[in-house]
Image 1 (cartoon, rainbow, N blue to C red):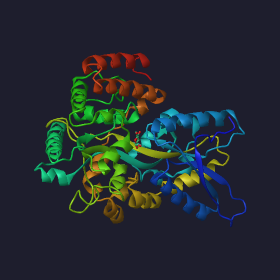
Image 2: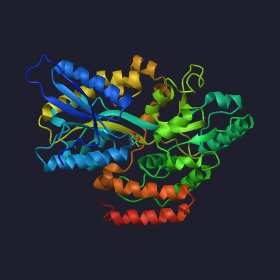
Image 3: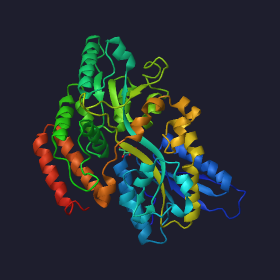
Image 4: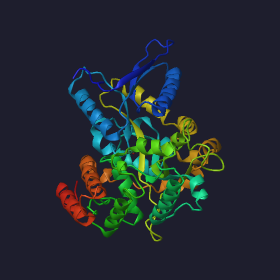
Length: 433
Ligand code: GLC
């Protein structure tokens, strides 16, 4: 395929006329919007500093669609030496095992000292078979956003368990409906049959003490009472405190409802804090005494349960098919550096992977919730992508299809999870993936 950049909009060419032998580095670093804007600012600064040129390409927002597109592009680039190349890819935290063969080892370009600045769990996640497939760029974790003003108005406290959340959501929703605020729902989240539902459901299951579908030894652990309980609970929300439409919601849909004042609670990623607070958000300035959107750790599954946020986030990797990998690696080093991560955290809540930045006064001033929620990031639970490697997408797909069926009331969780356990065991060879 000649048009390997198909589906991507070539957005900008940043040049520095000063350098005679400038190379052009092509970077695919996120969908249009603040991701693209902040990436462009960083890349532009690197281009000015080094004299090279940078071309940015944008892609779809949905992570599954991005992966499909990247896999196709990388395949074409491997097969066809003349095809146009993307040098640097922004990859999801679950992709290193899926795409490792297409990326260079970044170890020769990054010192041990630099690596040690990042959360060790993410560095481990990005290391496949001893090869550093990608540099950590920013992390995400699932959080609970809420309307402090509405809770106070109706004499309710922020919930610490899911059971409390359901009660508070119902109380506020009913009271507001009586006052004429008929479009308000209690809780919005992401339950589209897609990767985001895997993230949400792992939080429910983990909060009851259940596992992560497949454990670290490769054993399938989904047919458990904790998972049954968690899915029953989530199914009971649909059409009581959550609109049926959540069955098709991505992150942006939930955010739209919350920002327009149509939801009391919202599950979303850390990254959305800035968007919930951004210009045009009806809830901005209403929610806490300091005028920020109120946010807390996700509820526990009962008093004995725990608060679990799924680990998300994005990395930067250099393509094996790049014509100038060392220059591309230099761009990756620059974009993932403490200075650049600090700038991005202050400007747009891209939560740093560099640990020291959580002590940085400017970063904390811009993101006051980091202080109370640091533990949520550091204990966030990873999806089983490392252990299942190339099978992760199939595992996740079987899982979210099962969860979606339960939420849509087209099957009992007991039966569905039993079937899922069998299907997943059939995919692995006695716990080997
Ligand atoms: C966010 C997370 C990413 C996750 C995706 C699911 O972008 O950072 O890790 O896979 O949401 O929609």
